[in-house]
Length: 54
Image (cartoon, rainbow, N blue to C red; front, side, top):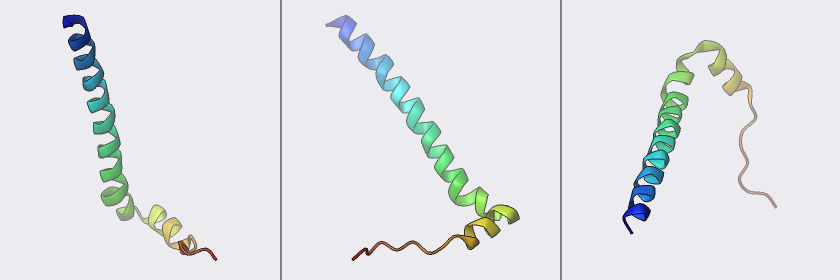
């Protein structure tokens, strides 16, 4: 049982690290990228997203 708890702690630590990297990447994509002019021009040139397909 003790071995299982040790492995669970290591697995949860790895998962937490992975989720932290994803969270930081999302924040950079939401708040930093729009302030870079050439990225903003590229984002503005993309077509509008159409959710409703018939």
